[in-house]
Amino acid sequence: MTPRIQHYVDGSLTDLSDLGLESATAGQRVLVNNPATGATIGELQCADEQCVDHVVRRAAAAQKAWNAVGLGKRSAVFFQLSHILRTEADELAAIITEENGKTLPDARGEIARGLENVEFCAGLGHHLKGEIAHQVSTGIDVEQLKQPLGVVACITPFNFPAMVPLWMTTAAIAAGNAVVVKPSEQVPRSVLWIADAFTRAGLPDGIFSVIHGQKDTVESLIDHPLIKAVSFVGSTPVARSVYTRATGLGKRAQALGGAKNHMVVMPDADIDSAADAAVSAGFGAAGQRCMAVSVIVAVGECADELVEKIAERARNLTVGPGDSQKSDLGPLISAAAQARVRGYIDSVEGSDATLVVDGRTGEYPSEGYFVGPTLIDHVTPGMKVYDDEIFGPVLSVVRVPTFDDAVSLINANTYANGVAIFTRDGKTAREFKQEIEVGMVGINVPIPVPVGTFSFGGWKNSLFGDTHMYGPEAFHFYTRRKVVSTRWPQPDESQISLGFPTH
Ligand code: NAD
Image 1: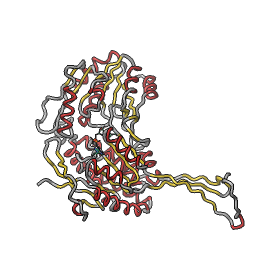
Image 2: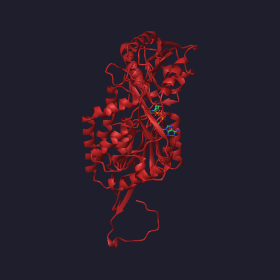
Image 3: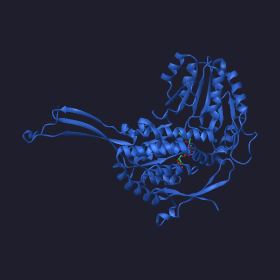
Image 4: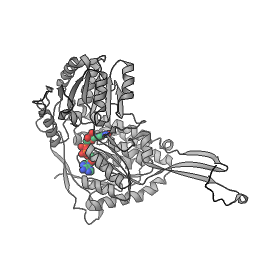
């Protein structure tokens, strides 16, 4: 029998039928596959509007008590969660690999990056400090408080089953909110493990809920009057619609979208290390990272040597199941993703571009959703492989004559998540970081995901809203500021004044 994938409500794993609601068995059922084998690993039932309402109301009831818990005790939950994640990471990594397909070292890597957010939030007492100004007028003090919003919806994508939920939930909870997470229906189990880890770390029941579903569930969540803010990560069209819907209802929203990340290689760069970086950032996680490099911009005469070195390395990579130590990259998430990526490679045939390494065929298992590393040279804007986010192990090379051409090419792109430049010249690097219109920039760093003490976010169609995720900006997003002016007058000071108060 196919295992049922449960929801997480009131601090425990729950079937919708256990919630005692009339419509509890009405939601659509979705099968979850292991992408390396195609085998079904579970079945989930989508939460309908009534289930969403039930879970959000339970979260709202629990949130008030959580907000009353002292900051030291709240902080202790994060220290304990950090310990659990450090000691039990292998268990979570195995779940990530089984449902997402990425290799075990890559799964451990995403847990380590999520852990940064947990540990940043252990310092919540510092992040929640307000401001005070004494004596702004005679006998009057002004203070600014940071207060939680209430219940926050977190909607996450398939490609980071643990890290993205940790980006969102840690600061939201640290700030005194309750969260309702709607993970990707393709990877629903990792976040259940995280919810349980939070409970074991001492988080009260109802503060971290997980409901499964697709578009309808997301829309019911966004529309629910007790949902005060929406954090979303996923593809650009969905990010745009989630942002528009939430803000149309007057809610706070941040929606991170897709990407097309360029890596510029200057003629003075160390070509071997640039080729290593291109292969690592282009083919790691089978290219299914929002910060994956998908376009190499070869400036001037370095192109031939660079293409040759990338091709040589790409051909030596091993494609296979994520739980095999031999595998460098695993499968794509689904049969549909495999067909889509293969279609992009097909589109190169008959064009002016050159297919240098073709990932459609190779030595990898026939079952599962595999596509091998693919390298396409002489790509130009206007080709589908350049214009679209492919989200697979496909690296395009665009050749340009000068640094200025590289900057113009990148600045004309509608995506602006990450970018990198490889050069040995400080002046070029400095000009690049000033001129480039992209949210996260690497100088000789191919995947510049900011550490947890900074915040993460792109520009243009890679982020709707103005607040980046995790780090200091998260405490801004998940709190609202209240300014209190205080005066303690003496009885004999009382006086009536109808004028507008001035200093
Ligand atoms: P997706 O947009 O298909 O799904 C994301 C979430 O939205 C899932 O929970 C899904 O169930 C839900 N959803 C899907 N369609 C919906 C709809 N019409 N209305 C409301 N909700 C809907 O994204 P995905 O395929 O899971 O993830 C891959 C995408 O995410 C890529 O485009 C990648 O670049 C992007 N991504 C971006 C970042 C970033 O930081 N910018 C990080 C990770 C992934």
